[in-house]
Amino acid sequence: MTIKIEKATLEDVPFLATMMLQSSRAGKAIGLFDYLFKSSDEKRLLEKLSWLLQSTKECYCHYTNFLVAKNEKEPVGTLCSYEPRIATKEKFVEALQQTGCDESVVERLDRLDPCNFDINKRTLMFDFFEEKEEYVDVGILKALMQKSLLNARLKGYRIAQTIVEIGSLESLMFYEKLGFAPKEERRCDSYKEIFGRKGVTLLEHEF
Image (tube, rainbow, N blue to C red; front, side):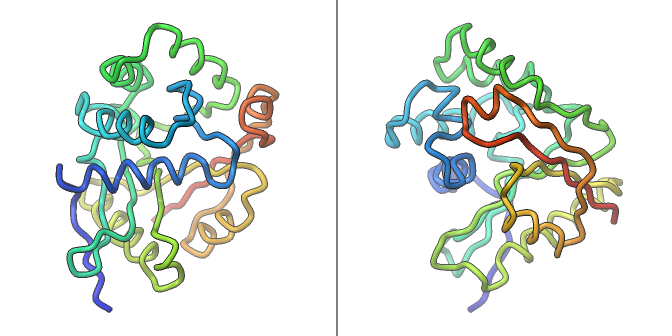
């Protein structure tokens, strides 16, 4: 099997939306986008995420921030990387409102503020690190990360960060194998109330 890593294009948007929803839920009853869009209807959420991926280009989850792993022409994995100094919370709110969210989405985001980290603007953030279930353990995620780190070096970055939920031992162990280490933790009542998890951990990798 030959896996190619490519920059995402508009044609990849439906697949990216599926991976975003899968990543955000991560075994929970509801994920971030169920919460933000006030819906658990998969068809509706995938439609909203497709719009979000094509909204303001400075939103962290714009499709141009994604790499896609492909087996021949079949997309099988994703990884999003973005610059926090550009992809601000304000830009995310703007993108959400472009998809039809009203002002109440700001209140929903604000409830998660206690779990936010003070992110160093000179780091590169990773998110939506996902693969199709039938392609687990064939090296897709490792290839995506290697390509992303190479691109980061070319941009002048030397530190990458990502966030995982407390208790997600499998995700934590995988990131540690890739060189990431826990840096900080946030335990939040609001996060536990909404998602059923204790909070989140910030992981960092110097390369």
